[in-house]
Image 1 (cartoon, helix red, strand yellow):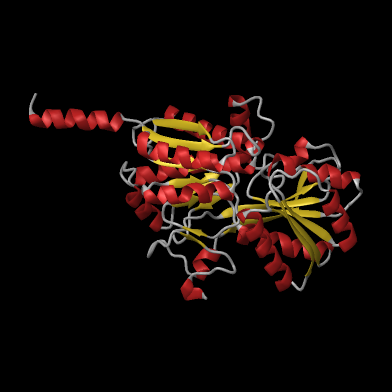
Image 2 (cartoon, one colour; image 1 turned 90 degrees about the horizontal axis):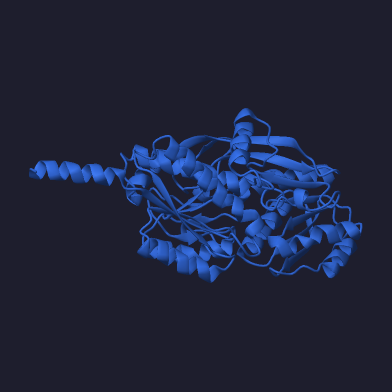
Length: 402
């Protein structure tokens, strides 16, 4: 065989080598109810893409680890998939604490990680792509609606880690900006499942509505306990319903009058959403509910496919970022059209105001179309120019913005 023939043979073989995606998600532990669907979403997208010929002629191969809702496992498995398994990209993490546990490792090995979760916002890091919704998409829509509808006295209960603390800061600022009053704020440690004192505090403070930023199976106990104590206050959330589908897991009317801003839930009624739900249940007939994070994970695989194909089949992070910088990486998702913002590598979304009714059915009093993830760009994050690999908050802005 000639040298040219050998090169062509090797090139053809390489073209058929699989593109490997690491999947680090909590399939057991406190967060499992909300995160098993993320794995399923990635599996469904992978199956569809492979059936249609793969990405640039190469099949997708998944390398999946159960992180067991344990941050140390995220660190262990992130090193493993980047060093030993040599994956091309990683889809990882439910809680913000998990993300912040593994993010330095992704930076150390210059990997590419997709965080397919709603979160408190602010990560400005070229190694991260975020497909979940952020505060300027969820709270900037939700809180004005709630204050106009129910009143301006607000009580927040939040999980006591970075997600809850930073989200509560956003709530505090937006309530103040809207002329409202914070009549109470509590941070609940993860794993707490008894809320009698918190319920008494809320009843004494007499808020017009409660912002619930509770996370995990244990903290979800609040809803039935509050209903049993006849709290009977409207609730507002950026995480409930869309992540933990509490309206399905708990008996009516414990979630009645919960309002959640979500970028998608199973009840969204449009043709592409219905077709997605049908395909999903055909593959996973025992799935109790398809949540927002499942859709975020599904669409992330298709975004990755588009980026690689537009980079002429390259999986190199910098080549993919050149594609993102063009500003037109978009996808017609079950929720509607979504696009990646080049400055922050976060995603635009349709935002649905999901109201839980007395019988725990869902209605949508309002929908905001094409809400951009504008905040990071406004305060000075521009990944097309520099990469600080930082997380910013309203009280911790880039130096140039202070």
